[in-house]
View 1 (cartoon, one colour):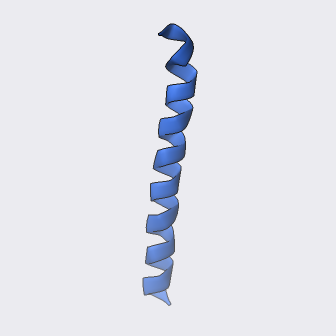
View 2 (spheres, rainbow, N blue to C red; view 1 turned 180 degrees about the vertical axis):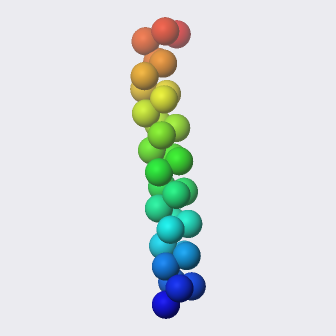
Length: 32
């Protein structure tokens, strides 16, 4: 169970990072 939880957390963090990356790119796009 803890292993599955760890995997889920890793997956969520990876997804969150990519979401943050996309958000940042969208935010800074008008500057270019």
